[in-house]
Length: 129
Image 1 (cartoon, one colour):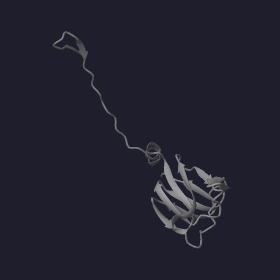
Image 2 (cartoon, helix red, strand yellow):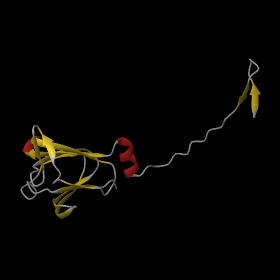
Image 3 (cartoon, one colour):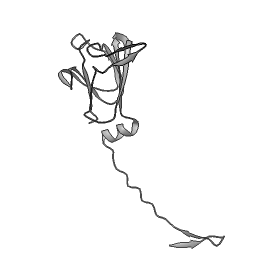
């Protein structure tokens, strides 16, 4: 359908239909930048830290990968004592590849690891579901 405005220019009328649909948790997290956790070497968020951002559900990060802490290259594997989760739901595991003992489904928040998980975390996984 066309209309002519006061200046003699034809303008087409466009009907827009917006199809809204709910996002899955994984889609929403990807839009927001994924899940984000910071792991700390010492209790009360002290010592060497490493921030991990994950964009896909089911992704696993092994903590044996080295990080730069000042002038020293090291890993946080078996040294995590506290954590801060900004977004997403994480599980912390005692062994590589999300295996062994686990502290599962930690949502946004922070805390110190208890004696059962302190200094034994070797991998981290995320689940947006």
